[in-house]
Length: 204
Picture 1 (cartoon, rainbow, N blue to C red):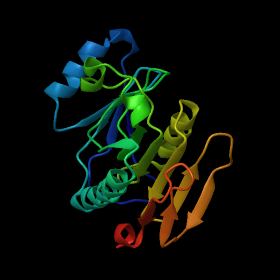
Picture 2 (cartoon, rainbow, N blue to C red; picture 1 turned 180 degrees about the horizontal axis):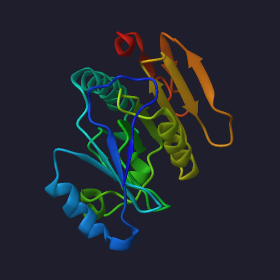
Picture 3 (cartoon, one colour; picture 1 turned 180 degrees about the vertical axis):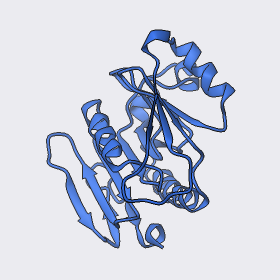
Picture 4 (cartoon, one colour; picture 1 turned 30 degrees about the vertical axis):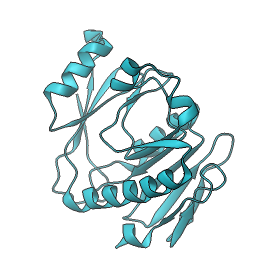
C-alpha cells in the first residue's frame, strides 16, 4: 500500500491510497460490488491492477466540479450530438483501467452502440472528451499521467484544470500538451464546436 501526499500543499483532506491488488485477481463484477459497498469513496482501477481510493472532495472542489458539469451539460443539450457524464461515472478503458473523469462527454453514435447492460455498468468506452480538476489532495504528476493514458485509449480532447496554479493543460492525440496560464476561457473547438468554458467561475 502507498499513501501519496501532495508536494507543496497543506491540505487537511485525507490523502488518496494506492493498493496493489494483483494477487486478488479481481473480476469486473467484484469491482462493481466493491464500489457499491463503499459509496463514500471514489474508487478507480488502473491497468496495472492498482486500486485507487480517493476521499470525498472538499466543498470548494465539489462546487467547481458542479460548475464544470453544468457548463458542459448546457452546451451538450444545445449541440445534441453527445451524452454528458458527471464525476460519479466510471468508464472501462481499452487497456482495462476503470477511471471516473470529473466531467466527460461521449458521442451519441458511440454511446448508442453499447447494450443496456453495458451502459448500466462501467461502460466499455473511452470518452471523447474528459475534464480532470485538480483538488488539494491530488498529485499533479499522477493527474498528468492519467491524462496521457486517456489520450492513449481514445480521448480526442482532454483538459486538466489546476485552480491552484490557474493553469489549463490541453491534451490531444499526436500533439504536444498545450499549457494556458491564467486564461479567462478555454475553447473546445474543433472537437466540441461552440463549447467555451468560462474559467472565471472556476478560479473564483
